[in-house]
Length: 478
Ligand code: NAD
Image (cartoon, rainbow, N blue to C red; front, top):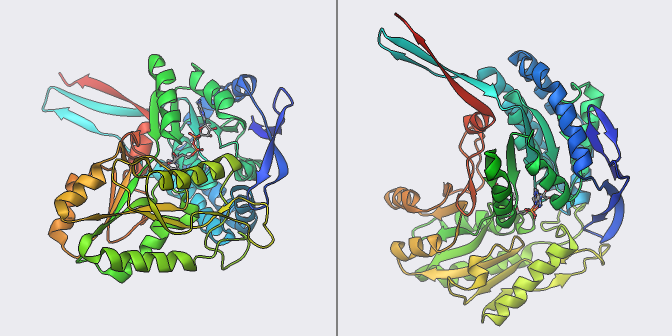
């Protein structure tokens, strides 16, 4: 497969004609190419989006609803093809990719209804005046997404941007652009209006940077690493661009002694290792009350050992391949660091060569103990199938440990004591708190992180507000 740019309704090569190799994580082999674009392609995409801007902004909400629904229906109708492409490109198990394609279609469907329901406020000043707020599209906006949940997160940005009446220049990760390419083909198939959505492929420092630097692109919605987010903020701030930054995490998963332990364990195995631990919401620090520490430790190790690592196409595979060679090496280097820092590896800790995928990038689910909260293993984002266990003696210490990180994306609490759960939820410095569940998502809720995990929120009206500019109009009544 050659992943091309989608500009003004057409698939095109990068202006330079250059291409990047595209690797299949399960085999380590090059299986296709991706357009290696630069600022010239971003300019073409901007011009197309700018030309389509006024028409799309003035398209009736009902029409926008129809187009976004048509995209959702087309993804649903072609789900297996999308899922296979996602799994091959990213390394995740095929069954998981199928679930993510359901969510990608849902993102379009959810924001199709938002286009119909979005409203603004009016403020009456008794008999003096009335104010009303216009919420107008920002214009041409940029959406930049990462490699871990490729189409799921790409559509999570594009859908609200379009629903709010903007035209879009979007960039998927250079590591996982296959499903964005299929989305572009889908747009052509259903006759989606040209120029409304444009997709430019290539490297972050070339394409992403050119988007952030482009004065005509008025807002950037970015999901990715914290250091990239910092760089984007520094570039965009002097231009006063609207920015939504969804960044990294080092999430705590806290199990109290009064929790329903079996229920907590059943979810915790996913919280720790789903999608090879490459979900920004994964709980990489497992905090366990000291009275149940050994029991929980033994059980989680036992469960982790059962997880089948291997060919993403097999139904019984729980852990697929790591997305890229550099990321594979990074995760392994953290396991080495854990040993250097004095940690004990309770299970896993090594790369694997599963049958049929001997040259792929696989890592065993790995559990580490014996490291304090200040160790790099417990403060830096690893973003792989690696968790660290820490005991705590009481609620106060649990809170202190949970908050002892620069990140603030998501926290999970397991307890049957509701008073404690609410008290902790209020004091945890995280944008998302799950109590007795994990990854239970209502698309209407604010989604995003505190501290170094980001700025702004996605989801529901938050996203619709981000992608619109409020304008107050005041009319005197006398
Ligand atoms: P990354 O920051 O390396 O890349 C993300 C995207 O930004 C890619 O498309 C990349 O090409 C682009 N990019 C890179 N440099 C750029 C630049 N200078 N200007 C503009 N764009 C640039 O992140 P990644 O490695 O692809 O993804 C993993 C990270 O994403 C992890 O830190 C993870 O926690 C985070 N993440 C966060 C959330 C969330 O909702 N908070 C969700 C998923 C992933």
